[in-house]
Image (tube, rainbow, N blue to C red):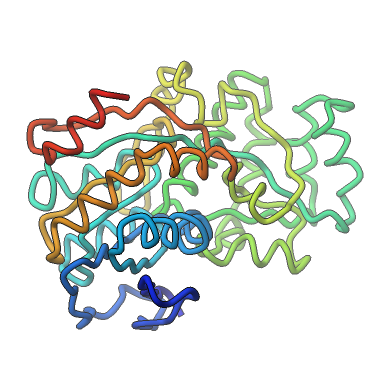
Length: 331
């Protein structure tokens, strides 16, 4: 099961599956009809808990609009939007590249409002948990993390770089560690699974549950995921965690060639949002983006482990709704 739409209304407190899209390839075209007053959101897979448990219900209560969400790899969702396979009216990826895929046909603007640093989460009852805990506490050097992950038999999970910015960021993070932490090239190669790297790949929504089940020793994660799921984690230095705005130039020095031949460059793993010109109900879409910039939403983001950033309009700012431009000016 790849994607799920969940719709919430002001009178329904729990999430209800509206449409299930099955299959391991691209999702089949959705026939869901977007109703007036419905914010139909497509969001990064790591945002699913945040969206469906916190932001979605809070948006409904605050505005009276309906809300539905599907979460998956940001790059993959963007590709499905471009192909016309899904038609959300709000897109919230992590990282800049997925939003840029939609410009200018589906949107000409986006607002950056938070960041999500990378960490390495680990299974607390695993055979390497004690050593990972010492690294997390600073009792062992951070370089030991990369040595440990390269150990034969260490079960590391990460997401697919072809469809997910977290998967791209994790690979770029390991390569930045070569430069900034003096991790050897051989260790970095082993960290990424060597010639068997594909065995490390999991879907964005399936990776952390696999770790929680004890089927992995450690996994790539965003800091908020680890916080929300109660997973212990090893924090990474700002120079390599893709979550510090002041280190954006360092992140941009990293690059990765995907299996498609596309070269992607590292960037701050920020949260961006835009109301798309598909999916109908533009007023509800704009209302959802405005809600993301509200004090209430920012409190939720901070509590759940995200780094809130002063909102910044990206792209053609004049194309954004006036109400959103005004909010950004006031921030």
